[in-house]
Image 1 (cartoon, one colour):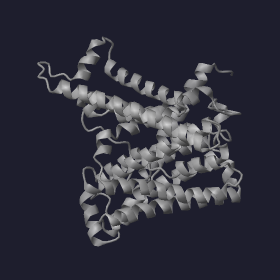
Image 2 (cartoon, one colour; image 1 turned 120 degrees about the horizontal axis):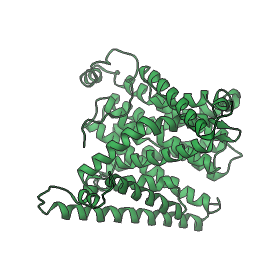
Image 3 (cartoon, rainbow, N blue to C red; image 1 turned 60 degrees about the vertical axis):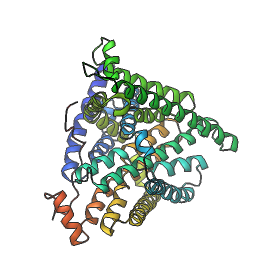
Image 4 (cartoon, helix red, strand yellow; image 1 turned 180 degrees about the horizontal axis):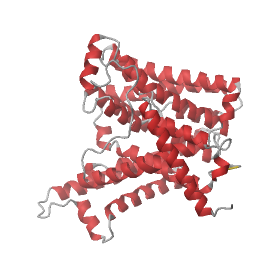
Length: 449
């Protein structure tokens, strides 16, 4: 029976989302992030197994409709990641924390660059740099999930971990933007091309920061005036438009505008999405508007787009790469260097800031998570033709493996001494004495806006 295009699309979403839900729940109960099961879902339904029977894959990759879903999911994931931080947090960082965040990126970046240079001798210098960037980032959303599940919300270690992840992600995405500008300019990193890339990134950042400052000043000016209705500037601006949920729509228009600007400057749209998220803070749009946007995005993304994003990414994984012993050795080598450099840099940096050995080592494992942001970058590189199917599979495999290792290693680290076990018992009494890592789940929304 020949199905219509619409029926195939709906059936594809049904199969992917349904199996992703089941697989995600299974791996959560096994103590792993849901993304692991969702990626496996995509691999099982990929081009070598069930995919062609359900219309989710074609001979050249995933279907155009699913590519569009993946594109939108990538945009929303990076926008949500940007909302986890704000310019005020960046301005108020201590020097030690700033240096820690930069070193936790630069040490793995340098190590992975050297190893990737020898592992992929036929690849260009620019491709090797892209590989090094993608496997060196710390995923801010995954860090937020771990901090919540480990009972570290509001603690000094939790704040340090989030801030370091913030700096790491900011640095990695900025380097990623510069490399993309060089690639789009011809792929030959010269002094002139680097100057153009740096200028484009600087111009974009300047526009974003100026826009954020204007929004903050307008909000502060409005907040300083007594209002009988108690509404902020953003509330009344949204009220001028009679369309339902106009405030959220305005934020999405701003985010899409930032993405378009980054594209016009030769940068990828995800850079615009990420920095547009930084624009949206309680001080710039108001507490109520910020909570409304974050609540809406959490529900829609975690309940629909993120599971589909990982499942569709799994469809693009070339499982034949793991059938060759040499390719499997390449994955293991890159994983070993990426994980050890990240864990080592994080542990040493935390130790230098005065943390004891269990907490320092746990911190090193926590910053080792890659997750959604790294995979989103890899998806962009695959779509732009920077990464081949094989290289894309290697990068995704390293990202998944390091993310799996992060919670397991952190929990093991906190069981090193009696004192650290006692602190763990106070935070997570239900998990003490168990060998597995805590189940990771999307952050729950504690209050309604």
